[in-house]
Image 1 (cartoon, helix red, strand yellow):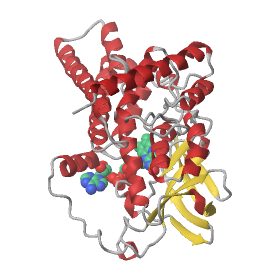
Image 2 (cartoon, helix red, strand yellow):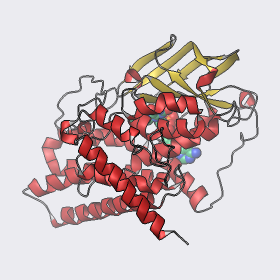
Image 3 (cartoon, helix red, strand yellow):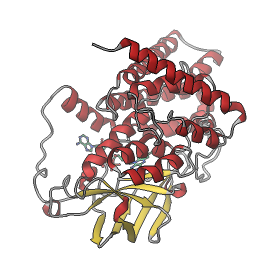
Image 4 (cartoon, helix red, strand yellow):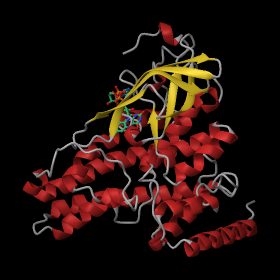
Length: 405
Ligand SMILES: Cc1cc2nc3c(=O)[nH]c(=O)nc-3n(C[C@H](O)[C@H](O)[C@H](O)COP(=O)(O)OP(=O)(O)OC[C@H]3O[C@@H](n4cnc5c(N)ncnc54)[C@H](O)[C@@H]3O)c2cc1C
């Protein structure tokens, strides 16, 4: 039986803390970094984390209540400034790192004073990231890292990276991995831009040449990196697809503006728009429900459902909107290389600065980043529907003996 009285008390107490935050740090007059610092110190960053580490030790389902009050009050959104840090690194460090690491890293991550990147994908390991080849070899209290990562979003502005590396090539691929946090300012870390179809270079190649990482920056046990990676990936999928935006915002909001301003809209186009709008609204409501019912700290396959839905729908919405624009949809402001740093004053304004043709091109990446749609379907088939898994001939074989790309 649920304890209704206790729940109501928790909610009342929580709302009092939210009110204290908003009254002491009015969003319109407070520097965003200061606001996020106060939010963290009051335990409203990740409500299920311990006190002193950004939380209040109450169930994670209460976080959505906080977010919704903050949205209504026009509070700045740190997610867009430090998406990998806030959405993925913080839950991973909390779940798998030592208390000392969590105390050192969580607050500046939440305030966005320290930006984070994710060092998983490699030229020969994307969907099958467990087959990665970057090596970390132990040398006393240090690990020496050599290898190459790719598609590393925001590495060019990051202070910290979440690194998955191979520490034992003789074990099967999932078992020989260890997880580290790496200071991106360490000698031997080299970041080079990779340019996208939009002209932007939001991601990078990262080279590791004899990089020395202290053992104190290891997350979890040696050889248990895959379990940490799963925490990161599940949170990544939720971060990408589980965003609860206000009704008629985001891609569907853009399409709505265009259809309202179009002089020639056919009945077929109206019907197509309504189908897209209904799917977008259903996805939004689904995310609200998933947020409210999440009882464990880290998300499960619902993040993959949200990610698949969002990625495919976003591409359809932008294709529809660009068609409505007609010739204007072909105009592109500039392909000059731009290095986004997501450090816009308000944090979340970055999205609003996207023009539509650019957003259309950028949306092509939605079904690749954070795991492709094909991989999301595999996960749903296997973990949600219980369908037979793909044949995995390399599951028990040593990584060193397995042929790779
Ligand atoms: C915008 C963007 C940002 C990114 N940011 C980061 C980042 O910050 N850090 C990071 O580590 N990575 C990042 N990535 C990399 C991303 O995670 C990989 O691109 C993705 O996992 C796919 O890997 P791949 O590109 O190597 O493609 P591959 O794995 O080579 O896949 C090629 C094709 O084969 C299909 N395929 C592969 N395996 C299967 C299978 N078992 N069943 C069915 N189909 C399959 C795929 O769906 C895809 O269509 C980013 C990617 C993008 C586009």
